[in-house]
Length: 183
Image 1: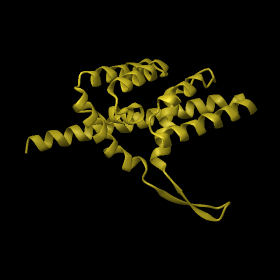
Image 2: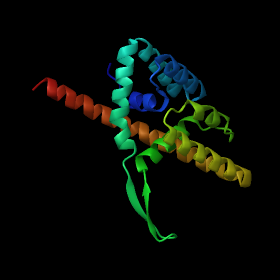
Image 3: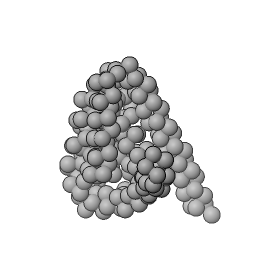
């Protein structure tokens, strides 16, 4: 089955080898998503995978993992001026976690949705990074609730930016596929 990059990303986050479990995770995540368009998207993806056979689904989820994982965990090296050493980081994984954070951050300054989404995340590195971000947000909110609006708006802009990039990539891919078919 063909999946968009956004569908692949959500299947990477919430998809396991068990199609039924993946469907449940997508439905729950959809119910927790801020905004009806993401809710409908995740629920539609749950329906889409249920139309596949179990074997086809397992093959697709494996292929998606093999496609996304190398990009997500591509390391970058930066120099830490405070510790006077080079540090390895994973900028795409961090962006991806920021994107998830923007999808599920509660508008009212609570972290209930974020804590509810965390167990649905299949990849342990993404889950750990997500948990750290949620805990950091809680620490900030305990000290100064006034910064929440800035954090909320910032993560919504990150979400919108990543959605925009995925949409642009999809249009380029569709154009390339069309050009390949008509050569």
